[in-house]
Image (cartoon, rainbow, N blue to C red):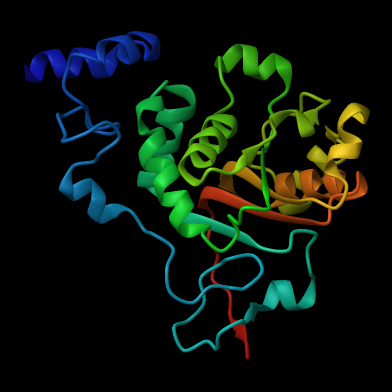
Length: 255
């Protein structure tokens, strides 16, 4: 059975989805059998860093435990962003990076329910009945290559879990931008400037709405900010963001 599990882990994402209905669940990292789809082995769980405790009220970056409630980090205090609030479930470390890459490029969509549970917990204050979930869109060409938009899958799962509205057509990516990897913060912002568009046909629906953007990883925040800028210009009232993981840099709080 262990050999079968290894073969299933190494096979294509499509085959795993079909075979998963009658074969044991496998860890998305090791390929060993686990209790349920998307579950991890005990030693893998211990390497995950969940974001909890004191965080910046705006961007959600971790703060020292002695920080006062409703504290902003130095960056948000000195340079307020377009997003009202941003929350994430995990620190983007070596283990969460592997989880997300296996999800995005390895077809391990069996982790969706676990991921959406983590995100719903981390973003509970954002996920109000009146808010709308909008995934960060992929360009059509990249979506054809990948077969799915990971942000859409996460948003769908969160919407089902929370009974919230999901509107993937409210935002489109009009330029197939190069990957953001290895770019500076300024380079990332320049790369996605003007990349997102709100279709004219949905403008009446967006007016005055509070929206939560859904994505897999927040790095510099440039992509989320570009999405928020387009939605606010179209008439949305407030934009928050919720991601599975985020890059964390040491920041000092402002009391």
